[in-house]
Length: 371
Ligand SMILES: *Cc1c(COP(=O)(O)O)cnc(C)c1O
View 1 (cartoon, protein in one colour):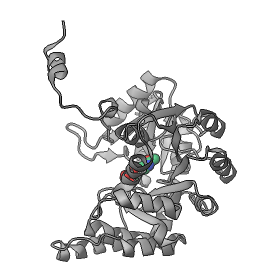
View 2 (cartoon, rainbow, N blue to C red):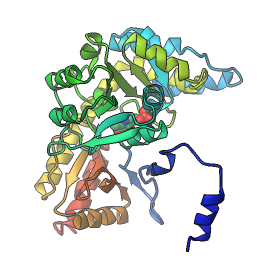
View 3 (cartoon, rainbow, N blue to C red):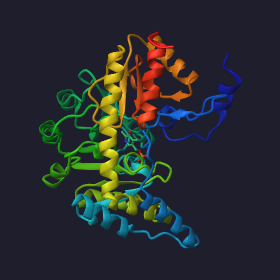
View 4 (cartoon, rainbow, N blue to C red):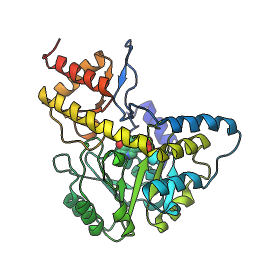
């Protein structure tokens, strides 16, 4: 006997496009604990220092022209990005978070039965945007939590349209080097684009996020965000960079007023404040090493992270969950990553000094090493 719900579904002629109902709703990082004060949120890789003062000032000034539409070409923000990153502003596209750039890429290049490759511990948005476009997600193995270029190349077919890798990757924190990136770009079939998600690129001193690779080829695009090191997750600003032909395609499907005026002006001030960005990178590197070492000393190892979080490994899924429960009881929110096929791990954002000390203390309590 079909249930009444199934009878309704069979009779109902109003249906979304194929693939949409296969999308699992995105689970964001938890942000509150029942009954706890002094909650420490380390579940969404946010910058513990927040945005630069220049960005906050710019956002406050935007309040005086809220009745005006924002500009549609984002020229001022693109020019600032061009200066700071030495890129051609004509080939920069701005989006509502890098999520929107990922979405544009799937909408523009992926049709029914087309395949999109990403890795087994890859970012959730790649699957969501692929399914939303009607495409087929193809998930490939990583090599001990590191992107495996050979596995990706082996998975490519005549239907592969996009290959997404985050470098550094979330939630593993690992990354691959320039020669591996080049080998991947070189080995893709002619109809496929390599998308380098550089959400954490600014945390890696000396890393160009793939710029040199983009300049020498016509099949590589990068996505970047203001949500992480720039501390502007609440405003939703991201950008993409790539060959002119691809950026022109993406601009055709971009809504003319996708970015709000406050977001544009705050992001411009943020990217220009290179001293503040450098300070955030240095602080993060310092406390990330401290946190990883502190956890390792109490029996919780992690891979060497290149980003603003540490992927803490436990002996089992039960132990990881029990530690998460203990942290929560102490008002500390971290991220469970079973949904990323890492059930015995917890992803912990690198906070400021007191946050890192609180985490190590609480994990040591959990291990019975402290009271
Ligand atoms: C956080 C994150 C982003 C950023 O997304 P926004 O939409 O720009 O906030 C993109 N990719 C990865 C891998 C991330 O972890």
